[in-house]
Image (cartoon, rainbow, N blue to C red; front, side, top):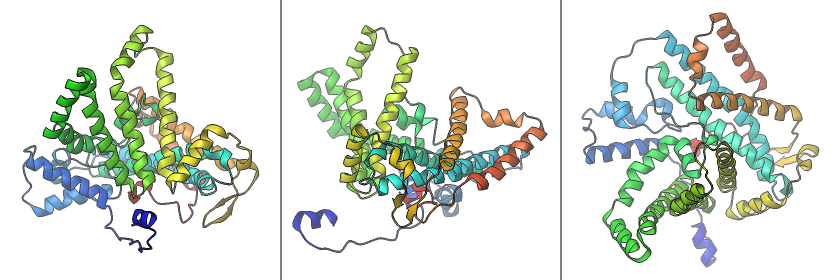
Length: 408
C-alpha cells in the first residue's frame, strides 16, 4: 500500500494486522515438519496433542531456536528425571542470559536509540550508534536464547544452539553459520537446496556453463539461490524496504564471494597465505565485523534513506564529542542524559561476554569448568550475579525492554 501511494499519489489507508504470538517461529517448525514428512525424513505424528507440544513448546515460542522434529520430538515425549548438576548448569545459563539482556542489551539500547532517533542532528556519532546496536542486538538475542535453552534444560530438553561466537567470523558466510544458526540451517534445507537443485535452476546452470565456462557456470546459480534466500530473510524481518536491502546486502556479498572463490584461492596461494596465517585471520575477522556493522544500518533504521544517510556519515564523520557533552533526544522520551558510568557498565559487561566467547572459541566448556569449583566459590559467583543484574541493569523505556526478535 505504501508503494502504491508513492507511485500513484493515492491515499489508501494502510492496515495494521494483529498477528498471533510467536507466529514466525512456530510456522517455521510446522512447515519444516510438514516437508520432512513429505520428503520421508520422518514419520508423521498421529497424536495431535504431541504435535501441538512440538510446535508450541513454550520457552521457544517467542524467538526460537527453530526446532527440528527429528531432534526435538522424542525428547518432549520421553520421561525425564531430576538431575541436580543439570539443573545448576541450566540456572547458570539462564542467569547469563539475563546478564546479557538486562545489563548489556537494555543499557546499549539508550545509546542506539539516541543516535538513530536523532541521526540528522548528530551525524558524527553514527558509528557509535551502530556499535551500540551491535552490542544490543547480540546481547538481546543471544541472551534470550540462553534463557530459552536454559529453561528447556531444566526439563531435560536439549535444544539446538543458535549462536557460536558470531563476531569471530572470518566472512559473511561464516557469520551466518554462527548467527541465528537454526534460521540459517532451516533456510538452507527448506529453501536453498530446493531452489538450487530444482529443474529450472539446473537448466539455468547448464546455460551458464555453456556461455560462461565451468567455473562461473557452477557458481552463478548458487549465487542467485543465495540472493533469493536472503531476500526472503529480509522480508521475514519486516515488510519494509530497509529490511529487504538488509537481506539483499548479505545475499549479494555471499553471492559475490562464491563467484570470486577460485580467484581468491589463487591470490592467497600466490602470496603464500594459508588459513593458519595469524595476521590474515585477524584481518578477516575485522573485515567481517565492519561488513556486519554496515548491514545493521539497514536493519535498525526506520527508512531506507535514513540507512544510506547514516552509512555515508559512517565513512565521513567521526565526531563523538556531541554524544558525551549534550543531551540527546530520544523520540517519545524527552531528553536523555547519558553518563559515563552507564557506558563503563556496558563496556565491562561486554568484556565479560568477550572473555566467555574466547573460552568457548577455544573449546572450553565454561559451565562445566565452573561446576568443578568448590561450592563456596560457586555460591559467591552466583550471589554476585544475582545482585549485579538488578543493580547494574537498566530500566528500559517504552520502546525498549522487550526481546527484539519477538517482533519479526
